[in-house]
Length: 244
Image 1 (cartoon, rainbow, N blue to C red):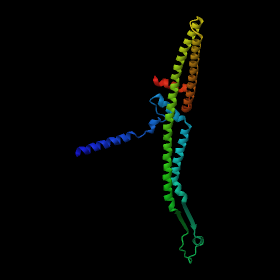
Image 2: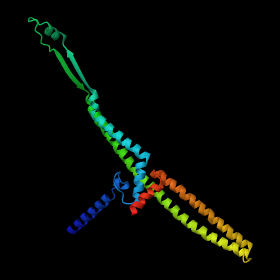
Image 3: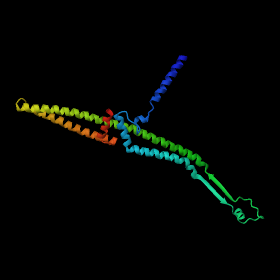
Image 4: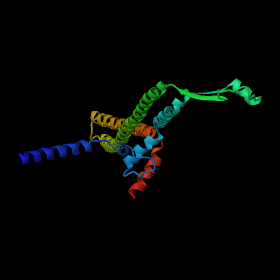
């Protein structure tokens, strides 16, 4: 019985540790400003986050919601009413004292009133505003996850386009050599016309694919630059310094 309880306790503890391990640390999704990144990819994500206009919009939204919460804390004071009243009979007795005129009324009266409903309503409104702050924070965290995924996706597509271009260049060079050899063989009457045309078509095909690959490199570079907010050459120099 005791061993069963220990086993259940151990399983429950391990389960809790597993649940805790699944909690997202959003500072790890995007490295905060001012902190050094561990690698170049994290640097690109940080750049994209800092240079994103949407990030600034979300920051303004969080600040606005926080200010509204602070405003709710003192809003109840707007419902406080103060009244000040001077008794005319008492005032006259002060100005022209008459021993035969005994006045019991005070010279002035001061009172304050506040609506009891303002306390309960303000508390509920503060709670609502606090939820708005949390929602704004979660929207910011959602943006972090989205911008991280989009940045890394564009970066790896860009790297893929570079490697694809290398393959296309090699294929174009090989096809060009084959075509030049076919031309020489055709001049020496060692190759038929159809074979020369086939070699020419193959070369033109590899040349076209190389040009498409070059365009893909430029387009994917532009897409990456759009999200990180700086030119690729500028970011590349940072990568080189990281490697050193």
